[in-house]
Amino acid sequence: MNISRYQAELKESLTGRREPNVHDRVHFDPAICGGRPHIRGTRVRVSDILDLLASGAESAEILANYPYLGEADLRAALAFGAAASKHRVVLTA
Image 1 (spheres, rainbow, N blue to C red):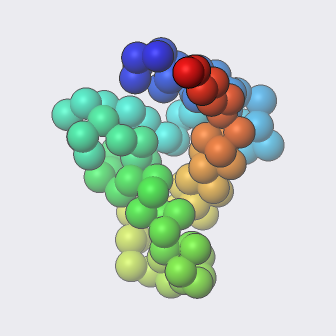
Image 2: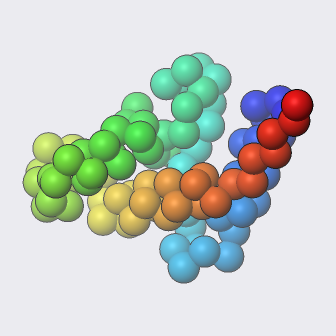
């Protein structure tokens, strides 16, 4: 599966999530962050936010260190990560 198709399917899987604007907040652009998912209008990768939260950082601490992010951006990163972990993978021999 090519990357653009994977990205399109992943974005589609986010439609209808509890956070209705996740697909508007998480963006893919080959010229930014090497095409990795990031928060639109920034160079903050979704994986950076997930790593910070996984390491125990509080939302308030992240928002203080990244004042251009909002609470909705953090929720979008979490929702995106959850959707990505549900993406079906088919292994072939």
